[in-house]
Figure 1 (tube, rainbow, N blue to C red):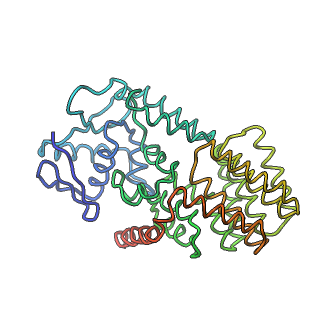
Figure 2: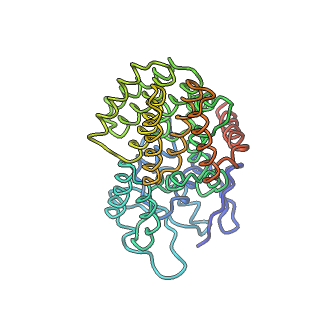
Figure 3: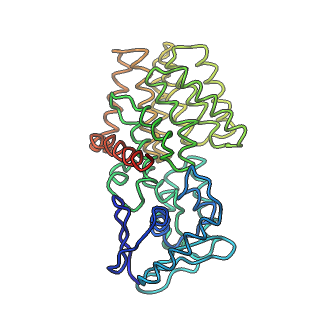
Length: 387
């Protein structure tokens, strides 16, 4: 069985020396299935990943799979199998030995990825990384989202820029998030707005950017009213769509906005609201982010010793959680608040020195010069294909 090579710049694929004549969506579907070989995807999942922002019918997937099977068979390529009652799977068999039976068992795959989802929800990134390292022995594969997310947890910006294990259409959301916590002076919200207009992000990323992520950028750029409107939109979406995992992050973002808006009473009220929510759900990632913003709030109200201690406590909690990007973003938020409200103060200087030290430890800064150019290049190419 021959391997497949892909050329994303030309949307061309080759198998066993034979060039596959593919339509655009056939290429996208094959690229996705090959990248996530041996994993089973339902029609709904494939529609979401390959046709984001479009409204084709389930039969669309079946028709594309039918045509791909004929072309792969002619090139003696891998098979796309139908997993009865579940969906489709492109099978790549190992050269020697056999695949663990659990890799083909949808129940095992669903259960293990469910464990990942729960660790994600409660903010235990280290547990996620540990489980990911054992997936071969345990006989399971991560789903499409978590295969990328484990690199995000580690803050591995170089992987997202250079590796082609996933197409740029799946990496672009994560690159935009990395751009969010880059301590660079240029405005960033416009890039995210453009990505939203172009439907450049997968469905989950589009939703999260629209109702949560972009609020931080608006606030940091002084667009407080737009930030507040985004948060209100997020609150409504979380309530209407029962997005429980969004509730606390949205309220923490609201605390950040109130601090930048120089509204002490609103910040105190919002802080109390988040603290009450965290009593019921004291998840590490959110708890750490809250502690750091609350530390900044205390510093602003003259309780510098208490605030500095809470900042340190927040960083220690982030160390326990293992989420590098959230740690950097929280530090950037805190520095942003102190820069805006207490410029030139000792508290601001210490916080910004700590941020610089964290960037040095985790290394994303070395990739910043080409981060935005990579994002812009992809959005330019996408814009050309849509016009």
